[in-house]
Length: 244
Image (cartoon, rainbow, N blue to C red):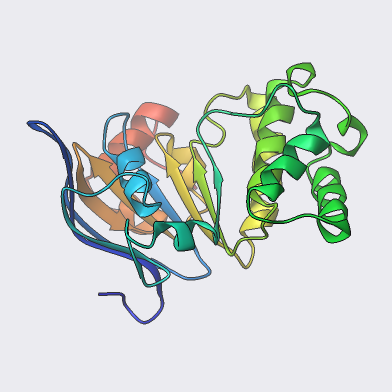
C-alpha cells in the first residue's frame, strides 16, 4: 500500500461513531523527511485521522500504515518512533521541569547519564535550562508549551507530530514556539494538524479537510491558485487571499 518514499499511507480510511461519519474515505501518502500539514475547520476530522495514524482509534474501514506497520495492530511499535505535541499540555504538576522529562523518558525504558545529558540539552534548546527545578504551574503558557515540545523530543524520534501546537498561545509566546519548531523541522518528518492556515505555511504538502473528507491537497502556492476552501480560509483568517 505504501509508496516507496512514504512514511505513512491511508487508503479508504473511515471512522464512524454510531450514525455519524467523522472521517469519510480519505487517502493520503506522507513522504519521509518533509513537513506535511492537515488543515481544516474544527470538526473536519483532522484529529480523528491523527488518532488513527497513531493507532489510538481503530478505523471503521480502510487501511492505514505508519513506517510500513499495520495500524492499530502494530501501533505500539510504530508509536515508539514518534514524538507527539498534543493540543493541550498534560504535564505532571507534581514533578519539576526536569523530572517531567525524566519520568516520560522512563516510560520508554530510557534512563542513565545519556538521558540526563539529553534532558540538559533539550531544556537549553527550549530556553528552560534555568527553570529545570520549577513546577509546571510556575511557568507561563508559552514555557509550558516549550516543555511539552522538549518532552516530545526525549526519544529523539524521527517523526514529530504537532496537534494544534500553538493554538492556545498569545502572539508573543506563539512566535517563540514557532521559532523553536522551525529548527526541529529540518531533516525530520513533521506532521502538523491545524485549523489556522498560518500554522501550516511551512509544510511542503497540505491536506485540506472538511466534513471528514479531503477536499484539496497541494503546496501553499498550488492551493492559493485554486478557488478552494484553502483560499476561503486565507480570506477569513488574513482578510485577503494573497499570502506572499
